[in-house]
Length: 168
Image (cartoon, rainbow, N blue to C red; front, side, top):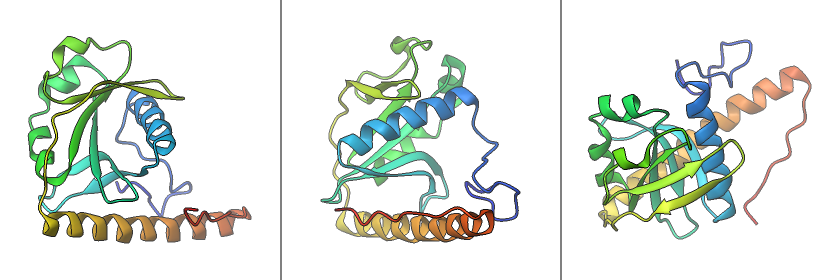
């Protein structure tokens, strides 16, 4: 199921994540927005992998956040190293109920609840190519635009006005 399903009675319901994973993602998004990043959940990368959250600064600095709702969730995931070639910084994000000791020491770590998040550990810096950066920025813009169109159509049908934000 896509992140926004235009055929659903509520296109914003995404049944893939657990309530705890959604809580963590929401807290991380709040924190990243406060830090000046634009965020987009569930973006499919050129590799075909879908990252949990991608955050982009006004200067094009790219962060990918992989949400882990449990120790088992981390242990069964073998795809996260692939995300590093698509970002300047990579973080795991989790909640207080998950032991921090399971996460690698050279990756970033964010601790979150539904309302906010705190960066516990900074990641090692990564440098991506200009071509990769451009590709990600264009994909981010295209997907965000498509999701906004779907949301606007849904809101219009529901009789809800949308106030647009122009980034200033």
